[in-house]
Image (tube, rainbow, N blue to C red; front, side, top):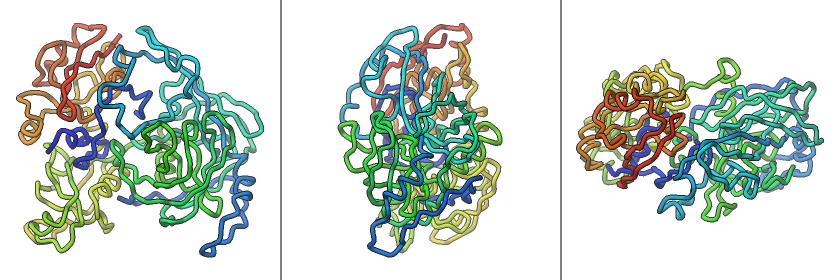
Amino acid sequence: MKMNSLSAALLAAGVTVVGTAGAFSLTPNWLKHDEKVAAAAPVAPTDAAAPVVPVTQAQGLVPNYRAIVKQAGPAVVGVSVAGTHAVSAEEQGLPPGMEGDPFFRFFRGMPGMPGAQQRGNNGVPFKGMGSGFIISSDGLILTNAHVVREAKDVTVKLSDRREYSAKVLGIDTTTDIAVLRIDAKDLPTVRLGDARQLEVGDPVLAIGAPYGLEQTATQGIVSAKGRSLPGDAVVPFIQTDAAVNPGNSGGPLFDGTGSVVGINAQIYSRSGGFQGLSFAIPINVALKVKDQIVATGKASHARLGVTVQDLNQSLADSFGLKRPDGALVANVAPDSAAAAAGLKSGDVITEVDGQPVVRSGELSSLIGLASPGEKVKLKVWRDKTPRDIEAKLGGIEDDGKKVADAGSGVQGGELGVALRALTPEERRAAKVEQGMVVENVGGPAARAGIEAGDVLLAINGRPVQSVDQVKSVLSGKPKSVALLVQRDGEKIFVPVKLG
């Protein structure tokens, strides 16, 4: 497989979609988001359900957008953030090739805000803006993780111009969900819907604060469902043509009845602005993550441990399948849940717990949104015969502890990467003799631009063949290290500040 597939191979779900890796970027996660139709979680009711908007559901009639905005607008908030970020020299500009990358994680800060273009070595102040919405009258708010990540101060502004300091209860970068709480009572709330009921062509309405313009409403239709985006295969995005721009991030997406069905999160753009393709996280996914964060302060995601790809008709014919449906297993990670269950390269996974898998991205979502330790029943096509396999899913955190002793924490002197050895197939695909794959990333490495799927070739000029070699360099407590990584067939040095 090509290196761009390897770059996507270690997504949080442990399920890879071949050929979906993004372009090589050294832009740090605080600037670039960090991120199939899933079995969505049951929709949790709000404690103060809003009255039903009088909107007819008759086909062909336009929803009462005025009523939706009047009813739901007071529960949509602006989110302002401020903090300090340590930037590297590479963050002063985009690396070659990035200028043509249409996927922008675009709600990291407002263009022109103080500190937005500053660069330095000692930490740079930053400010940013986004949106959110109130889901409980005692001050629980949903927004995007990338809106508040690394923020020291978070302020929520209500539609009536009241402002509150917000506490970040937790963030989940895998799904890009964050949960905030403000100290207030009797707040207006949105009504929560069910994204599973959406169909392509249904009308939708977005409310947010694009470019800081509060309470802006835009409308469109559902363009597609279950979109799997580069680096975000766990989330089955809702694609719409409702205009969203920087500042809309974290704001609600409403259906024609005025119920929230998604959280606006990303756009596809060659200019950085709206070009007709917007993507929202289904509310069912967000609520499942919210429940975990409220209960434990974090969200957990399952991992199967396979690299998969879509089938075409030629592959389907060769495997004896009538249709090119399913996720073709290209590789099984050693010591993974898939290996323990007996999955093999060449298997085609066609169902998970009775839910059909048509494309490989659907498998990523179904697994990634499950819980570690959960047992799933897989229907597998092998040797032109269907068979049932049960797998006990692992967890991302567990895998990180197994493979990454190389400084997987985020404290000073630690690198923040989880590593594992390359398989023979991966070495051949990458055309390298040594190196280790980055499975999980956080802390200093993530801020420097290292991503899951990168191949770490050397650290401070020393070739890397084991975790112990990385630990040996880190044992000297260096203030910074130079990592030689390969991504998408390109090699480049990345400086990482550790102190």
